[in-house]
Length: 401
Ligand code: GLA
Image 1 (tube, rainbow, N blue to C red):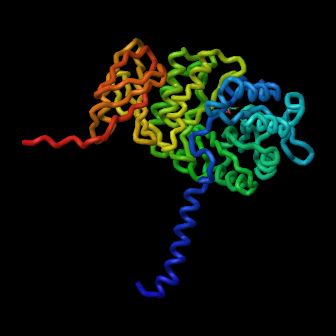
Image 2: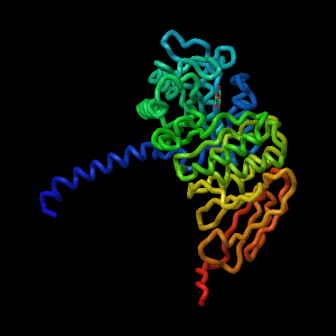
């Protein structure tokens, strides 16, 4: 290498590499290093949202222990805005339902130690027919920044005919960046045009499918889970596959199924957005959503999306690597009746330990096994564990002869 090459060419090449890396990591802005946690009103309230609901929900997030368990974002979904923009072309909250204005509402949510999220759509109208962002990207994002919005869900209704989703979301991302307000960017285009490929550059989370309609929730949940398993390599800190709002506590799944969806979301490192009425939730719903042991699997700092290891006639084993070398394990029974599920945890590591510590994350009990877990799991149910080898792992010796 000549001295001239080192002096002139290398710095330029290094600059290009840095710029390229900067673009690839465009959203490594410190937000959503673990999957976002919060609340969304869509499945429980649809368009029946007003400032009282949001304030009471913020209160309940704190008093119920949800905030302490990690839930942070209190979000509006569709229908929050007035049917018309104001005289300056700016969005405003519906005057009857949000008489104090959206900024005052955001301030209230912030005063509770929580963060505030809002919804828009890039087409002329939102899914529910309210004013969309078309022709107003800059104005709307500046309005959101002035309102101190922390989380922005961008939907896809009436936008599909317009342009390419990656270009629209990238453009929005640029506008958000120019507002200097850090906002989590939630891409909600239902998995169209493979958002897992371009999403990490422009958003922190992206929906992978259409809505999980509460009425058909269980089969839809299983379909989303199957799809998400194939997308696991795209998830990493700051960039998450979003299988949709949780169906816990809205009356459409059995308690067993609700525990299953929560465990699966956690092992898949999915955003945890509660979709129920947290002001009136039952103790059993609260025990599911605020199960800190399960939440800690979802929020594990390693940021790896877990995967299905085994599947046999409706019996499945899922696993997720955790900080410190442990593994989360979910045994799922998709069958129509109770089933005995067995799994040899020694399969989870290359080396062998003589014993493994096993923490049951729903029973809150700790035990020890030499290898096998055997559990009776009810129909549509799960058992969930955190497993750790005791002592040092030794590589299994190759057999002679
Ligand atoms: C779409 C989205 C939902 C919700 C509604 C609001 O269906 O996927 O999550 O935001 O729009 O109209």
